[in-house]
Length: 390
Image (cartoon, rainbow, N blue to C red):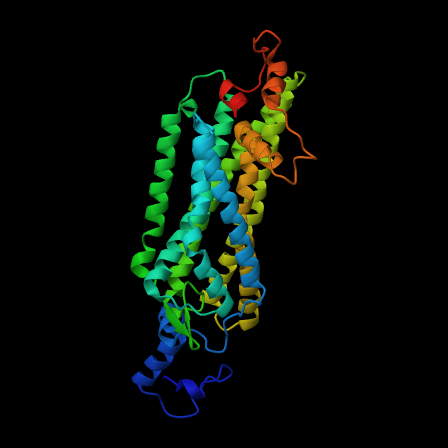
């Protein structure tokens, strides 16, 4: 005998009324299984939870963002100018650094749009520009990740395996690797042009917002795929390379001045690279993962969504500083880049009195380390010719 669901009690073994019809029971069972069977469809059809309002960024956010973009734009223009006009010829290390500077510069065309979007919390530039902006954001962030990983691989092979002939010492091979990285970035961002749309959320047009209910499932899937393949895998490769490089330095003969200088330069390069990962890439991926997961599985828990969205806003703002930190990496990784920047700074009117520069002083210091008769002092377990030059 079947009881009516509304009157059924776990403490009872008999039905209080007559038997229920089969349609009523099927409806009740369907209502119980509905959250499991079609949770995603309900979320998309209902337009999300209307009680959870979108987080409004503080007014100073757009000011900080405009400052970061302005400083990054100037530093990257200077870096590209140095690489293109002042450093000749290029070696594999310079090729990688030049491509990293390009990945930092690709965000510049849409930087004003992002500042205005952050200021008003409304996207007023149409769907096509939204897609272009998201594509360039993806290229900017993951271009930095991939190229920092290639820099770590290059430094590992050219330092630890400097006695062997390998492809990492060839400029043509490194150039092809950079082209592969750019192709991967293009394919990675291409789907945004087909699936991403702007949405009206509580009266405001949004672009790439977690409150776009029709994109919640898409954001969840894309986030975890790109976090694993676009961040975790490259970061683990970078950690392994720098860990092996650190072990090599511990066993190196650091009694000679040139050896100590090369080790110090490499340690500074490692420190800056890992700092960029720790400050610019890892926090924003962690908070975004929590945000998309909470939005999908706990859309009604507004306090969690609000706190996570606030944390994500701060970490995303922090992630934009990578374009300001990468030029520091160039100074440590390239002797020629550092020397040109030093000469330029010392040539400024405000610095001439305090920082006089003697032409050729860098070459004299390098020559003293190499030997008085032009012969390179033999080194054991140190760095190859390519690394000495840059």
